[in-house]
Length: 290
Image (tube, rainbow, N blue to C red):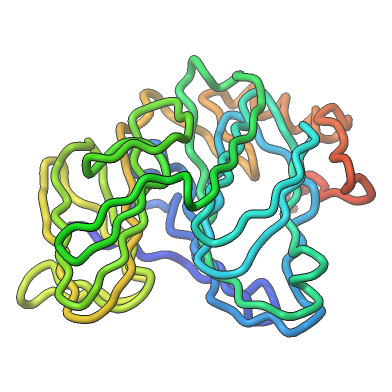
């Protein structure tokens, strides 16, 4: 197993985001090209998250929450609140803009925020796919209880389960909740795999214990059993790596640097369109550092 150490950034109000992918040591896990773990944080009444409208190309964004909620709006006209255990999967393809904000009622009352934002790179044949949005409530996602572990499959196929989320390449993304004494075996059914400890501790051997925030990538063909003496929660992810190189600049992912340059100009020119209900502000294109 290979440890993946992220960098934590304080975005204000005690809201920390840890970027685990990409980094120099590891650019991706399967098709996961970006992985941000945020919180937990307690927002006082009147405080919340305001990610202003911004663009994406060549990827799918996946939001998954443990606590709190967010309101998603995009240029397709989608308005969707995401709650813990739900899945928001937004396919950017040839281009989409969206915003993510704390809803008015939740902001007024104060709340706890904790979750993951990830980007899934698209195969070259699908990089210019039409933009689309999928939402599935937690009740729509398949689960299994086995060995003292309740496992929910968020996307893809693994552990004998298949998620209803439409994906573009071999992938798996799962949420495993361990009861005391629970054990979960991670087989080599996908080419690349990793796990992130969210709560509690898991053992991978008599001497190796991994606590909250620990992320480890498995070697090709490596199998491991996670064991928890007490309650724990672990996210599991991976799949087949994308063929060819992927370039990432700001919110754009593409196999072509020229395509990213075109996306920059399209955002400057307002060609991504406006978001109904959230069209008064936007995040400008980052300026080159002088």
